[in-house]
Length: 507
Image 1 (cartoon, helix red, strand yellow):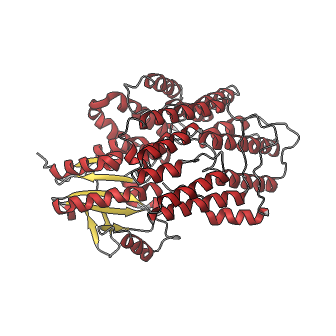
Image 2 (cartoon, one colour; image 1 turned 120 degrees about the vertical axis):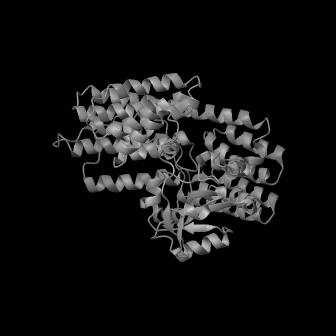
């Protein structure tokens, strides 16, 4: 899969920086192992070679494409994706031995993103091969080894002599450092990016502590807790970053904050404990420790803070996972949660991440009424007697676009049998006009109906279906029943879900 940088942005930065041509290493003592900083012109050259390689691959020029990818790797020899594009090229071309040799080199180089291996469609031809699984496991081991370096939490630079005392200067420095981290994301390994963010935020917070020393309402320890939480997403496993959160929460609670502050810290600690492994199977050996740690913090919350709804969502999720196949017995509780916290922003965010399927099942059928890009009213009643995939997506969404080949193939095969697709776009109005959207879907062979209300994440359908990330597909059966959501409607699982939806009779 193409994983290139925003070339125009990098090129602009290179011009502003004078196009230095050497890689540099951080010289300050940071308390964290930081990685090589590459000059922006080197990153731009690597990106251009990657793009060139994929263009050649599209023309059927495999060996020329591989040569371009290798030239890009030579520019950034320690990069995260060294030989990865080569592996994708060989896999797409059916040369599995060469693909595995290249991918093994990528993993040996420290590649630490197992989700990338699982979801990259270019690697699909490799996944049934017994050589693939061990590479995924080694990638997980790489991630664990890297994240172990983050367990100590944020460095503490408070009181150092070189802190930036001027707010405007601090913002300019922070913006510049954020850009540096951003343009290195596809070069550094995942843990290296997090380490750089830890160091950046630790320095920023120490400077803010100096600037706000006369503002007692600003709490340095609390801001450190919030920062660690912000640097990890509930969508991903946290690994040793959970240990970093433990350290920061313990330090903050030792300051004896008020109940609201303490409840916030305990909620964040609970989420971190669960997300160490972020499992959805209570039979997994690691489930018990994560669930117990999360519940310990949730039970210590006093209540009455703005984190009550978020905590309730997490607690409900833990119970649903442990209920397993018997989770339908919790349907009334799920419905009560959805009603009680319908206007709680934090609860809704957590519900969209963890509870979307359970809440949709508890409230189904949901009303669906919109206007398509042809100005025609569209409701689910229009699809009575047919199976329909409601596909929340956007043209800018890489994972959404990666699903398109499989979706178009499924549509071609099953449309004559009664399968429909209804796309709901979350494109941004200031970036994509309705006509631009229409042109894009036409050129990319998406002949089904489309809804584009230009409200992106704020649209009523997005709220009703608890969409917090995309792609977010929902499959409805011939009888109007809810058949599946999310992963069940993506990739290799899509065909089976379509067949189930077509067979749904309501009996």
